[in-house]
Image 1 (cartoon, each protein chain N blue to C red):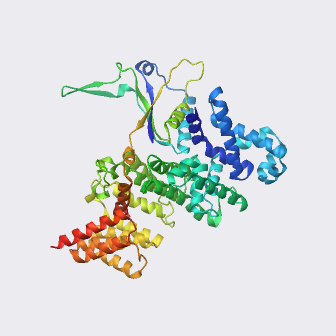
Image 2: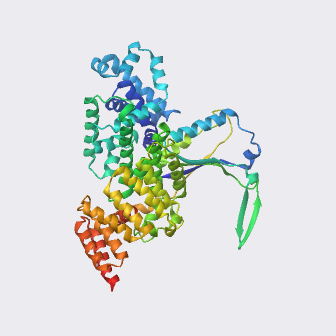
Image 3: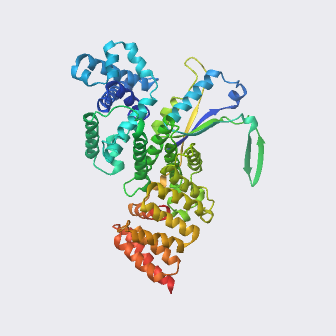
Length: 418
Length: 142
């Protein structure tokens, strides 16, 4: 029974909290009322059975609690939103129902923007999003991010308090900061996805689960904002990257590089979905630049649609990296562009880009700069210089297994010249 | 995790199938929209009658083709969804929300849920391997 209630909660909680936030004005109390309703469900459903419309049931229980509190708590009345007050003042149950039955989509979207509001730290945004929109428990979030449960609980409490203190309005931003705010929402989802995708540590199912949750929430936003190209860009990027999950590890458990992956193990459904989303990510208005997720998804798509590693369209990838480098101005993107150029035009041209990057000093201390440079030198037959660069990269990395790998390459670099 | 959710049929009900009422189409559309809005629906199709299908049976190295309808089969798939959920219970919960014959209607309807095998590899991966993989991924994909 508990599992069933949990499943209902996963499906219903976000819209329940969103709807209640519209009533009471702040996410903190909305979640409390929603949790109260959940507790009631846990008490009643084992005996009475799960109602036919569990979402409506939970909403009804929560709104009764809200009305009760309205009637006896003056401070609560003062705190709540104008709309809530208006409805409560009239004290008409029918009106209350009407408000609740309106399309919840807008509320859900508002809730997303509130959870990813710039007054919150990135960590708080992630925790709040997973908790309020994902319906994850504090414990689940803590296990996924490998931090103590108390840390996550504290982050969420503080985040709610901060939203209340700053009187963050429950709304979809419009006007000048709309794009930036949407970018904040998408960033949170991508961070969640990457936390699962990179899987630097941590055990078990919660890691891929994070990727899936990020993809699911992306699809929810896409349904609510179908005309925002970057939402589709992010979905495309996540689905195309996730399509390689199964192929990233060989039968012996060893990691497999992109070039060496068994492409038949790539997930065709996700690739197909990713490619459809990619089409939606290209702005209809040609004056509107293609977004950074769309460009990255474009690169991922070039890999996903290459039948073999040799078939990869590196020239097109180079063009996409150029656009991405212009959009982001990021030296890390520039380094990636160099790798693509080395595949499209050869290591000599790429070395020029990497040397310019080195001279700019923008990547000083970043181990992948000498690592890439070493690879290019090696391919140019300059093994001795490659060795020095591999060693430099090994010095710079803080990661033991990576250091071992780089030193191994340093040794074989010298060997190749003999 | 992903589940294949199939709606099952059998020769008897397929033979008796009339064009469903418009309300049923509407209810199904609403159900599909609900799953799409919740971000769980990845794919889905309804299947044409088995009279348009065929079974290919291999025995002793020989392939025998039997054209539909599948009159011998006890039951078969009439349509399917691929859904992404966080638990077995959530998959069951979505299945239970599928439009179905109301109370008092003797028509039997059956959905079958099967988990799609994926991602298990990840569980057996050591920390060290995950780290190495991350490193390689940075270098190969950027």
